Image (cartoon, rainbow, N blue to C red; front, top):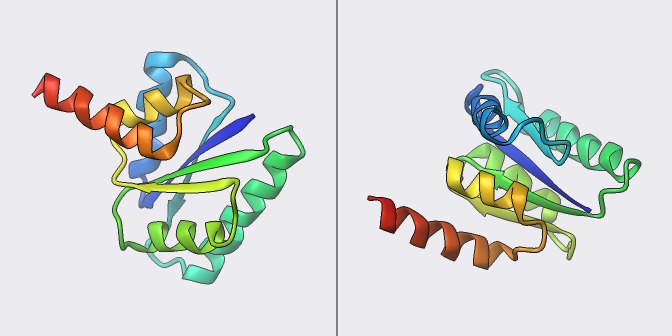
Length: 125
């Protein structure tokens, strides 16, 4: 089972989780971990690793971490945690369509998620 974890600056990722769940209903596979303004990188790494460890106990065996912006602390932390792992994937630059797709299509590969949601948005704009 795959977990989708949103990571981001401030409460943005919490709002995105709430928006996704207002459309899809409550999602047991969707989690948000916000980076506090005064929080250090070590603390954030610890919280992300703890979340993954706790989710393993509930049967999750793969993680897709979606970050708000590439190069920011949440993205860098996710990349660090995923380093040398074949079961933790990181995609930066999330948007609502990407989150909805990730939550409803557990088998989609990260590269396909990017391509599919980019094409979807291009059709809408």
